Amino acid sequence: MRTWSRKNSLGGVKIRSDMDAREASVLRSLVGSVVGLLNDRAAGAPEDELAAMTGLRTGHNTPPADAALARLLPEFHRQDPESGDADSSDLNGALRGLYEPEIIDDKLLASNVILNTLPASGGKIVLTTEQADAWLMGLNDVRLALGTTLGIDADTPEVLDEGDPRAPHLDVYHWLTWMQDSLVQVLTP
Image (cartoon, rainbow, N blue to C red; front, side, top):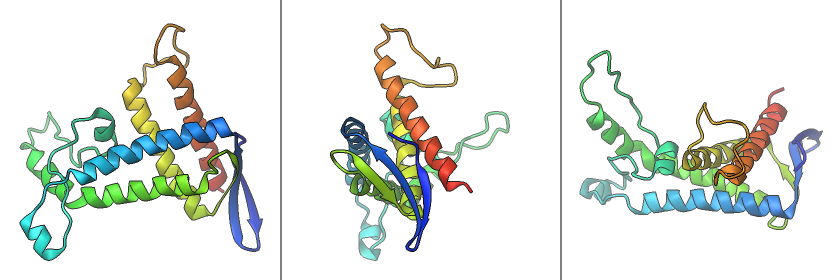
């Protein structure tokens, strides 16, 4: 993949890059995995009589059990152990029930922008600034899910030992980080 570039045209700003077929395949697979996680979560939302009568959608009131999905849909409020705050699970459950469907919709929309603008067999990518913003959101979600699955944290070395089963996947994680950073640099004047 080439770094992203910014071009002004009569039709507005265009953000461009090029991706080979292998890279496009890897990115499509990773985005597809995130879409699958989010769709499964949305499909499993509990039915609520009041929501059905009013047309409001509700989400789960408990956090996801899957670690990668929990990273994509974190708690809204974290209890401060030093302040002695009351248990925040009721607050988190209520907020999750209200907002999780919209958050999932936004994440799915961003993922679909990537899938719709990324040539299946690689090639030129041309984005509007709005599409580039969606790419940033989608790439961030893919990085978060992959990083959580691999157990990436601040103490993870840049290069893992050859025998570490995470080593090839860490390279993909670094590639996603580079791609996201390159896109941020182009979008930030």
